[in-house]
Amino acid sequence: MKTHTKRKMILDCDPGHDDAIAILLAAGHEGIDLIGITTVAGNAELEKTTLNALKVCEIAGIDVPVLKGNSQPLIRKRETAADIHGDSGMDGPVLPAPVKQAGEEHAVDFIIRTLMESDGDITLVPVGPLTNIAMAMRREPSILSKIQEIVLMGGGTFGNWTPAAEFNIYVDADAAKVVFESGVPITMMGLDLTHQALADHDVSRRIGGIGNQPANFVSELLTYFRKTYLEFFGFEHPPVHDVCSVAYCIDPTVVETKKLRVDIETKGELTYGMTLVDVNGVTGKEPNVNFAMKLDHAKFWNMLIDTLERY
Image 1 (tube, rainbow, N blue to C red):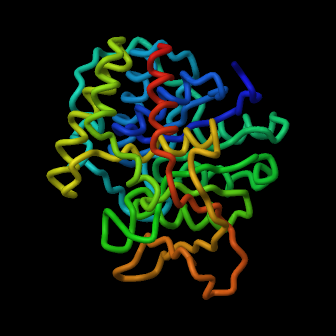
Image 2: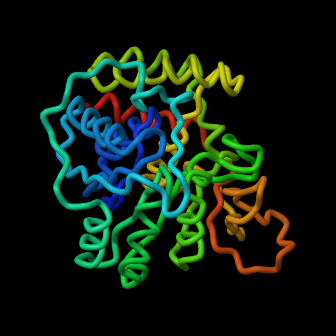
């Protein structure tokens, strides 16, 4: 039974195994009105992340526009995560070439136009590098008052790409700085939270037992992701980082949060891309981020599995 109005969402992503699962949750849950998927270079080059988004839409019958965004960070050289996600950005499952095509409008133009035409009721959910979002803010500052909330995946009190930095923020910390200093309400799903979203054997068994095509696809994604996370990070079970942002938009009680100050390091030789999370309030600066601390594991996985069962 529905108890909430659908939350309007633009999902900005770089598929990516966990991005793909995030798309399925956003498109399949009755609590979300997914009005567009925008793509960015991140886990793989832009052409690959866009192709992957189209493949996910095709396999699940998702009828929303997919728009290509930026192929390079604002300033720095592009960096991808082929070691983790494979050369395609979504290695493991073998999917046919999609019939669905990306729209001709640039993702940044789509974001600006859609926000400006809205009633200020759209949530942006960037789960890759923040290049598209920062570019939209720079090009049309009037959108800032039109963004209901930004629920992003990135950062943390520790890193996974460097000792200091998480991948999404590191790839374009200059863009992250624009977003974090924008004054827009931000909820941040950092590694502190997403490393709790582990697809353990029980979760994998439940998803594998669903039997429909999207669920089988997720099982294949998790099989590949489990292998690379064990090899590179020593994780027995893979974390589905990006899904956390979508889950929060559906039901904010799935995570516990705390208002904290988070600043982005863009000049450090060893700390570029670091999110300085002022856990103890030592800077005296006003909090600017709703920082996710603790995941309700059962509620999170029940939400995703129930959604996959409805496909």
